[in-house]
Structures are given as C-alpha cells and as structure tokens.
Image 1 (tube, helix red, strand yellow):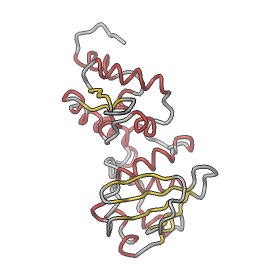
Image 2 (cartoon, helix red, strand yellow):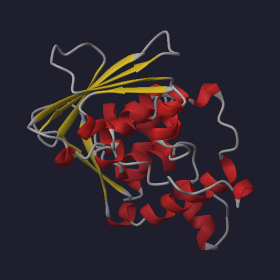
Image 3 (tube, helix red, strand yellow):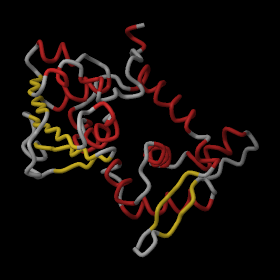
Image 4 (cartoon, helix red, strand yellow):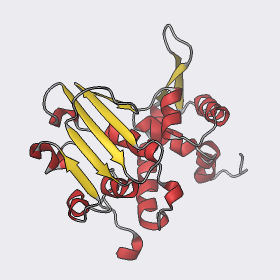
Length: 227
C-alpha cells in the first residue's frame, strides 16, 4: 500500500498499516519467534497471510528471518527497527483501553489467546519448587474448556489434556470473568466474592494470585467514559 506522500506518518503506515501487521509485531514483542507460536496468538489469521506479512516485514528489515538449525522452517526476530515499534504498540494499546474497547462481544472472548497470555504472564520465580501445575476449567465453554499450565523451572507449557501431575491450583470460572480479572477490569477477590471464580489450592498461592500471575500491561487504564 502506497500513499504517495512524504509525510513520515504515511511512510510508516506503508510498512505497518496492513491488516495483522501490528498484531504480528505485538506477538514478536511478547516472545513468539516461530510460525506456530504466532498462529497461536493470532488464531484467525490464515497461514498464507501470515507468511506474506512476515516476508514483507523481513523485506523491510523490521524483522530478521533465520533458518532453524536442523529443522524445516524459520525463526523470526525483531531488528532494531522492529524493537523501536514497542512504544508505538503500547500507545495503541493504551488508546484502545480508553477509547476502543467498549462492550466486549462474546465472539471476541478468545480462550486460546487468553491462555497464551496467561502462559506468558506467569512469574515462575514466585512459584514454589521446580514444578507447578495450574488447571483452568471454563464453565461456560463446551469445547476447549479444560487447560493446564505446566511450569518446570522458568519454562511454561500449555496443555489441553491432563498431564497426569498433581495440580497445585485450580481455577474454575467463566471465560469473561477470567479475562476481566487478567485485564484488570475487576479483581480476583471480587470475582471470588460474587462466586464467579473458585480458587482451590494452598492459601499462600490463592490469596494473592497477582503475586505469581502478572496482570495485562494495560490493566489499570480506565475507559474514557469512566474518567
């Protein structure tokens, strides 16, 4: 897409303005580096479009594409130009929290995206021992309603099938409530008090969830209508 203008905003949008491009950069900033990791965070994107956007970003030297040693496929890393998009993405997110979220539709409540975010939000150093198992059960979902986060050291894996380990903390709730808590729209304590969230596990972990699960970086930004 070309705008035919010398304005730096126009030139930047020629590189960043295509659909999905900024969200791909969001995922790269959050730690994704492989094609399947990007797809997991962008579940509605087609493989064809994702490939094209990655190629475009690589051609513009916003990302660097590297062959995975001994495997098929590539890893993708932000260049200096790519890293400098982080303040832009944060500003877009802050603007979105204030002005664009409105009432979130049920169709926008994406459990796969939530679990990827929760995986990335675990503060593993604040969990006891070398292994912890966190189970989530979403009472309002017919499919994809049971999830496990498996923490081993500083690594966190997502599992849709029972890994067979003893569970340290059980979350039982509906999807909207869990998203609201992680986004900072409501507190875990209020959801528990209203009986929309049940936490089972050692009180050292359940009484202060935010000690070991970080909130969204956009938590605490109120919508404009509340200001």
